Amino acid sequence: MLGTFFQRANRTQGCDIHANLTAVLQRINPKCFTQPALGVYGNTARNFLRQPGINNWDMGVGKNFRIAEHVNFKLTGDFFNAWNHHQYAINTGALIGSGSGGGSSISNSVTSTTAGQIVNASSARIIQISGKLTF
Image (cartoon, rainbow, N blue to C red; front, side, top):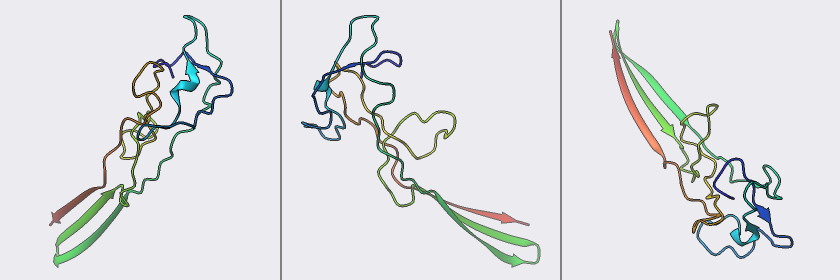
């Protein structure tokens, strides 16, 4: 919650992090966290929050048409996020690369006005149609 990879926030005891969510797409209550002293780790555990999952379907269809003995035409359609499910944007790292899926990008600075809110979304459905003539 502090805008840095290494520092951890202090979690206020007895505060429900999923209560009093007032902003659109807010996932956690920023009032449940405080900034620890400089150089001191906060009391939150590593990876204690869960983010929205990925529900992404990429599909492709194709058909070959024979025009003559040595001439073919191939028509292909590719659909990225085919069912158009909302995907929250996140830097997914080297394993997934720059696909159309996502996780969530939750603002993680205690002092930010968007603290605890999802602030980015990936692309909606993308359709690509191509044709290829071989001879």
